[in-house]
Image 1: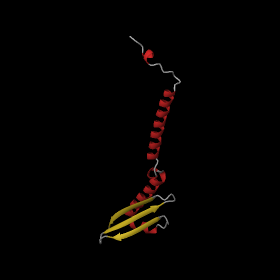
Image 2: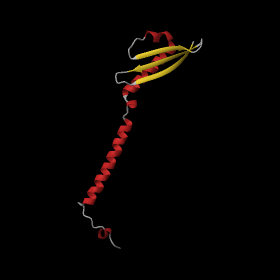
Image 3: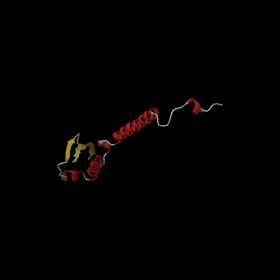
Image 4: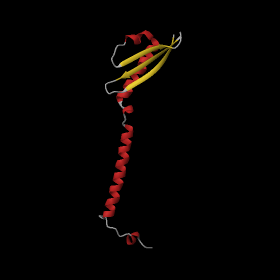
Length: 111
């Protein structure tokens, strides 16, 4: 039986080994950058989740006490009300924070 060392006589410090190692490193680096760019978007930032939770809290507050949302005066919040019929009201919440994350939610309240 013949050993494989006799068939492959490539030294450890060859250019071929360096090229293969650099290509493997560059492929791994490319994949890591693509994963990083996909994960860290404006929709996954903490400001986005804070803004979304704030709008949801406004929704729950409007269900408990519909008149309480009229008392909110903030330049970052735009609240519009529209009556669909005599028992159904559509309330639009739009919240913009300092990082220009804009959250919009339509809520229907039954009277």
